[in-house]
Image 1: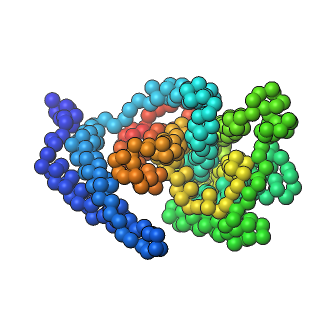
Image 2: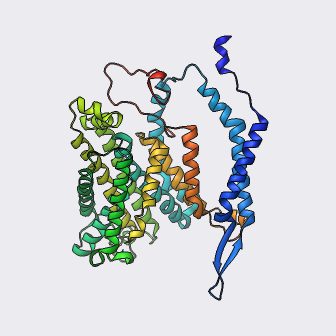
Image 3: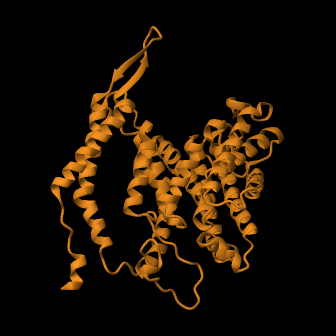
Length: 458
């Protein structure tokens, strides 16, 4: 009977839960009153007037109070019960068998996604769902895969990853407009230039780690953005670069001319063809990034990244060149960001420094952390949830009936990101897919005892 005591459900104190809920509601009310309750607008006489949004304010406070009560009555007892168990280890054999099937199903769904969308919405509605959801999500999936090399595998916190994204985009835009080179030729050039800048960033930060590394990489990202703004003769400053050439299908453009894609194949002209082509192009780039990353993890350089992540001092004692290890991580991650940046410029046809702010780096870092650092499937899942939810919020017109006609759900996406970070850190501190397994085993794969790891699980 003594062994069953830790498994008993902890006592739920209703009075304490209500008291904590009340304090949380008061704190939320005090915090959101100046931020949400009041709004300044400009009238026809160019005067600023103060308006109130009490329904929206009270609705947010009620939601926060309900979530706090749910946490006190349901989530907190479950966490306490799990923390009180004598045995924290959990066999990973079932997950190891299930993960490849999940990955294969995800790839299969991604390949069939355009056809599913066209079948459900038709040609007219397919452009929005394939472009705004499919292409947009896959861009961040690829960026997450690239940053996962630096943060998830090598353990180097990079808050300026968007700088390499910008280098790839501007490299493609400038070379394509100045020299008329094709997308397929500029794609590897943009990746190589981004990798070069990754090496330049890697040299000054070789001796840094933790918070200091994060500050330096953040400064690097801001330096690149300021260069793009102030180097007007080359980058055109805030005005950006427009008229960027679009990629073609083996030299066949996607236009309404007689030599266009639709005319060559005897089809009726539709912008959907170019959207589908771009979708499969970014899908191929994302799968290439995932394949190269998985292969590199099994090579000595990949195992050096993992050793560097776990303990840099022990990594040096084993004779691993930490300088080259950090440089290869920065260069490889930057190269994939350059690929994604060149695709972004080709897809948009217009780029400006406003597309490469720190907020983009924060979103990519959040995708890697929420998904589970080092987990490819987790990064893809987090990208689908975070970017997909942002795009879906644009379609939630019924919220205007609840919060008012002026309510714009997209303005609160960062609030949702922050809330998701808090929930994940409480519920799953190591991410949605909390796997950090070595890529090489001596003889057999074994689960580490719970008392030998910080997180409480082997």
